Structure formats: C-alpha cells, structure tokens
Length: 152
Image (cartoon, rainbow, N blue to C red; front, side, top):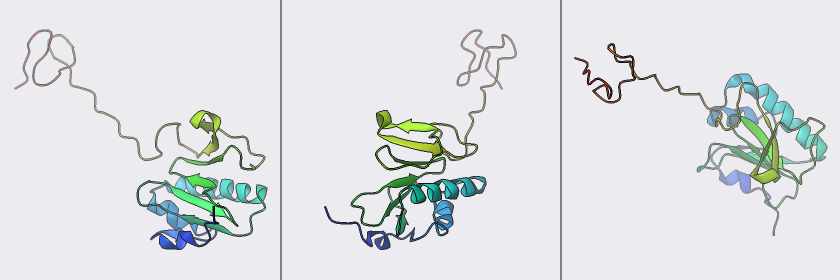
C-alpha cells in the first residue's frame, strides 16, 4: 500500500496540525467543554508515536474526524463528539484507556461528560407518557388500555 500522503486535502474539512482540530470539532458538533481534553489526548498519542507530520479530515459519511501521520497507509486515530480512539496496535500514551471497541481491536478515551454508546451528541430524553387519571396506567395512543379512559 502507498502512503496516504496529502489525501486529507481532498476533503472539505481538514487540517494538518493539532490546533486546527478545533475547526473539525465544530463540524462534528463536539460540545466545546470537551475540546481541551480531546486536544490533550491527541497530543499525547502523537508524542507516543513520535509524529513529525499529522493530518486529519472529516469524511462526509460519518460524524467523526479521521487522522494519520507521517507515512501511514491507513488512518491511525479517530475522534467523535464523545471519544478519541486508536488501534490497539498503535503505540499509546501513558494515559489509561477508558474504553475498548471491536473486541479489543481499538482502544480509546471517553471525553468529559460522555457516556459509552452515547454517540456524543446531545441526549434526547423521551417524554414520559401521560398517566390515566382514573387508574394511573400510562396512556398508549388515545385510550387507556386498562380502563378505556379517553382524554378529551
């Protein structure tokens, strides 16, 4: 396989340093209170890998940033609104991973306020179904399934 080289330049949203990741974070709608932690983790990963040239881009089909460095043939780091992760084979920083994916093939770090499996975006909570005033059973649709009460 050939090096990815300047492939990142072909994407609408891209950059070639850690500071420019802030632009990417805005595009994937990462909550701003997570930005500093994400930048710190990325920087630690780059130091652990003795990176000379770091490149990142936002692919159109996913809500994450992909990154690679030096003469890599494949992406080496992925950043979503809730986490930063790398291949388990990639040299990692001293920071203990807080998550494992794909049966341990990938390791990563949840960002502050994120929960595993949350997708990192704003959580939408379902509104509780109204209760029947007669028997306190949740109304499903337009009628109480227990007593037949119908709201007006």
